[in-house]
Image: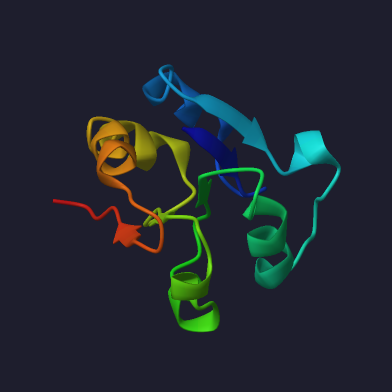
Length: 105
């Protein structure tokens, strides 16, 4: 899968997604984009955007987009590292139009 991290997602998270192509908003020169612009950038170019913004699912209608969305509970690396095993599982289960929130146990 082709995945794009929003600008506030720690880059070390990539270590859990080595079976996928992962890039960042920064690499595309799109820092500071609003959520709608992130979804537009994702559409047709990526399968899954990964933000750390729980409000995104209320702001965007994924049913009209051919992407899946995986949302993180925080952007703090030490906390995300502890959730590392959940992240590739969520990516593997993602389907277009789906929304998955990774949560703390």
